[in-house]
Image (tube, rainbow, N blue to C red):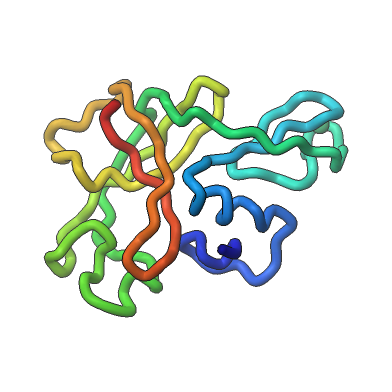
Length: 145
Ligand SMILES: [Zn+2]
């Protein structure tokens, strides 16, 4: 699995193992060996101390919801085939998407396909997990624990 398989495609990256780890069920962060700053999504270089010695560590993924919205217009690759939305069988049915703050202090964005929008509340406890879509790409889903 290559980085281009993570939802949106990038042709070059120094953090290519990110998508491979997701496909194997792990959400990873990088931690700077120089100053200890943590990064999600993983970065190869530290913007705090300019170091490039990074350690890869898994994120547990449990945290509280910071914010959420509904996606009405899907990313381009989701529109290549039916269903147009990755977690909906109905064309243009919106899917909730949110940002979770996990215990490492990092924020993870993910789809919330199994949650009714009326029941989603800021601050609710959720867990972020990798998921492989029908087209083979990997993404992240937020679910109740
Ligand atoms: Zn650093």
